[in-house]
Image (cartoon, rainbow, N blue to C red; front, side):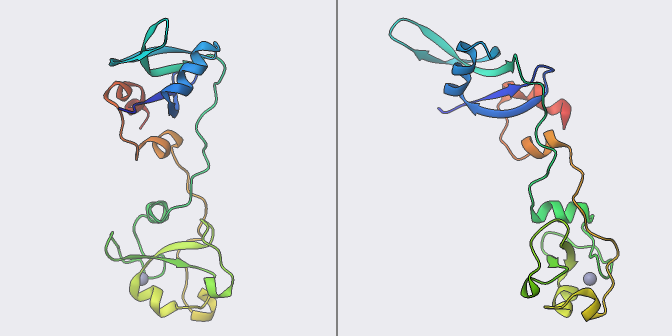
Length: 171
Ligand SMILES: [Zn+2]
């Protein structure tokens, strides 16, 4: 079993997950204390036995997970509410595409500011052109989405049961 350990900041806000070895180091260095353990997992040293920590609280860190979201197609679609940013038609997992406003062929990057959710017909109509060149109008200027940093960090992680009371209340 390779259970990780959930790290809470001083205010009990979940921040990250680390290996149990790193959790032990923090505890022994006085940088964290454990509040939950995996009661079926024992670590043996020559002189002692310990339960593996499941949740630790940092004694020194009171920051939050990063608020800068990691670029992903899913976040683009969520930001644009699963709507084509050219014609306004709703799209879904099967019908969406990601359009580079300034096309890659013209040096456009895959960034929050340069990509939008688009239906496939609009995307292929626009092709390797800017909206002006293609005479297509963007409904909104794309920007960096605002996220719940805890949700962004933890929603795609399989949560251990013992973590849920510390994480779910922030999602
Ligand atoms: Zn469209």
